[in-house]
Amino acid sequence: MQCPRIRVALCLSALLWLSCVRATRPASTSSSESLRYHISYVREPEPALDVEVMLLPGAPRLFRFTQPGGVATVVAHREDGERLDIAVVDGAVRVPPDVRILRYRYALGARGRARGMRLHTGMGDADAWHVAGRAYLLRPHEVSPHLRAQLRVTGADALLPWLPDASGAYHLRGEDLVDSGFHGFGGRRCRVVLSDAVMDVALLGHFSHVSDARVCGWLEQAATEVRTVRRSFPHPRISVRVVSVPRRDEPLFGMVLWSSPPSISLLLGQDATEDSFTRDWVALHEMLHLAHPALLPRVPWLSEGLATYFTELARARSGRQSAGRAWEELVDGFARGKRAAGERTMEAVVSDSDVSQGTYWCGALFALHLDVEIRRVTGNRRRLEDVLEWLAERGTTSTLGAFGVAVDAVAGEPLFESLLARHLPRRAFVEQEGLLEALGVTVGVAGVTLVEARDSTLRETMDGTRTSGVAR
Ligand SMILES: [Zn+2]
Image (cartoon, rainbow, N blue to C red):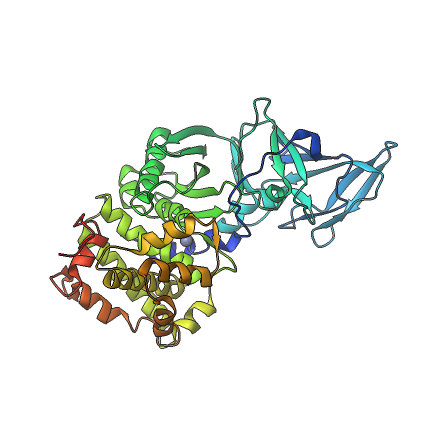
C-alpha cells in the first residue's frame, strides 16, 4: 500500500533541482583546462572533503557555492607563497589576481537535519557518504562554453555523475561544475547492464535483509519498466546512489539531478525486504523523469504528472501489478489530490505548491486525459508515449509550448491548448468522473471495477491488458 506522506516527500524530487540538460557532450581537451580540482575524502577527525582548486592561466576569479552554508572561509595561496583567508560572502568567493591555489574543508556531517536536506548537504556514516556537488563544490560564478576543468578524487572510491579517464581524472566542462549532480564516496558498487544502457550504482550503508545484488536487481527492474514507456532507456549511462536509512523498511525518497548525464539518488530503508521492492514505486518514478524532457522554465505539475501517471501504467505493463491495481492506484491518487485541492481550480492548486498531492495528481489526471484524447483522435494508433519520443528526437529540454506542439503533431490536430483550457481554469479534478466512466473504470464500495465502456479498448492498451494499439 502506498503511503501518501511518502508520496508527498517524493514530490520534492527531480525538477526542483533542474537547471539545464544538454543534448550532446563535446569532447574536452586537457590542454584547455584552466581549473584543477583535487578532492580528498578524509575520515578524521570527522568525515570531510578537503578541496584544492588550482587556478591555471585563464581561470576565472569569481567563484561561488551554488548551495552556500557549508564553508565559511577559503584559504588562498598567492604565487609568492603568502596565505590569505577569503571569507565566503553570500556564497561568493572573490579571488585576487595573483592567487594560484584555493583550499577549503567541507565537513560532511555538519549541516541540516531534515532527511531531504541532508541528501544534499551530507548523509552517511563511517564508511560511506552522500552529498550533492552543489553543496561543497566551489564553482565559477559564470562559466563560458570553453571553460574546462580537471577533477581528481583521492581517499575513497567515488561515484560521480561522470566517468573518469584511465588515470582517474575527470575532464569536465564549466557547466558540469554548475550542474554537478550527486556524489557518493565509499560504499560498494554494482553495475546494471541493459541492452541499451548501463547504470553505475553506489550502495552507501548496509542493508539487513537484502543483498547488494538484490538492490541492483530492484533498480534493473525499474529501468526495464521505463522501457515499457520509452522505446529505449533515455540515457546510455546514468549513475544511481542508494543510501541506507536506519530503522526503516521501504524505499523512502528519490531525486534526480540534471547533471550530464543525470544522477539519481534514492533513500532505502535499511530493513527493506523483497516485498518492499515488489511494492515500490519510488525508483521507477525517478527513472521515469528521465523519460520526459526537462521542462524549462519548470512546469512541476506536468513533469510530476507524467512520471506519476506512467508509474502506474508501467508497473501494470511489466506485470508487477494487475491492471485493476493500477487503476485503483490512480483512483486513490486522484482522491488524495482532490482532498488537497478542495474547491480550488487546477490553476490555483498547481501554482500553490510544487510538492502537494494536488499538484502531482492534477498533473497525473491531465496526463491521463491527454493520453486518452490522443488515442481517441488517432483511432488508438498514437499515444502519449509518442509525444515523449517526438520530443526526445529534438533534444533533452522542452518548454510547455513545445510540449503542446508535440502533442498536436502526434495527434495530427490541435488538441493541447483546448485540453489545457478544460482543466486549468476549472475546479481541479472536474474532468475525472467523465473520463473514468468512458474508460470503464467504476468506483464502488468494494473498490475499482473495470467494465466494458466506450473507451475500454483504449484503457486495455494503456495498461497492457491488450497489446494491439489499434481499435477494432
Ligand atoms: Zn517526481
